[in-house]
Image (cartoon, rainbow, N blue to C red; front, side, top):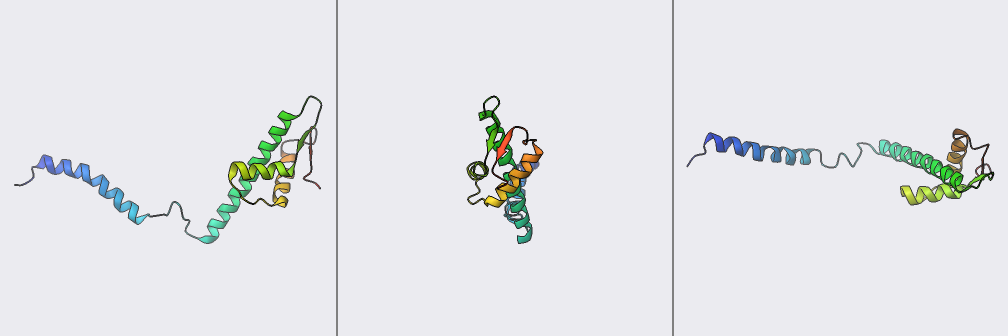
Length: 122
């Protein structure tokens, strides 16, 4: 009882890719989740923290501008930025100094001096 060429080729095409995926999973186990170096992981976490704060600032400014009435200044607080960073980006603890610095940068970047008020300079 031998295999015919057709059965052999079918088996290779059926089992071959599965075996390749199994071997690849064993070799590269966890590399996509764990970075190679702790220092690199720290840099990546810090970059994500800063990026998330910048996004929270943008969202806080947009929300404040929408909530402000005609002729009223938009009020953007550091607490708003901290809350958005916690709720939307999952940062359990956001330093007030970091949120205030990000809000000051966003205040200049988005031209808020004309129509916004903030407590980031206090």
